[in-house]
Image: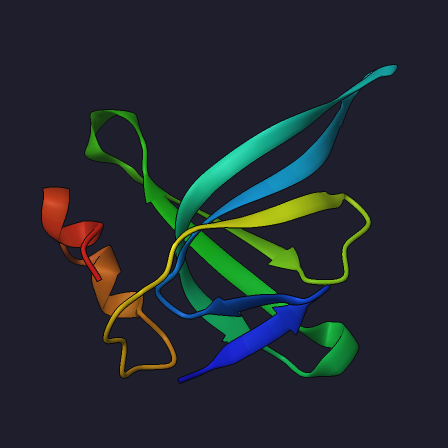
Length: 104
């Protein structure tokens, strides 16, 4: 199982996570929460990237990528751990529709 440890937080492929990141709009900044399934970890050491996917309004899939050492990431919470994930990349979820796209 592919995993990564970030500040004593074990995240694995297939976990449902919440990423709290700061968003700067003009002079204001706020914390935005993006919740979805971790579908990929790529790169090594300081170049490590994570890809998180969730189903937005209208059934449209939304993916975001972050470097794991980004200063904009405030916190990462694990909402639900995956049970039986045997792949390192879950790109097949892009083809699935509805509830099947969120089940891992």
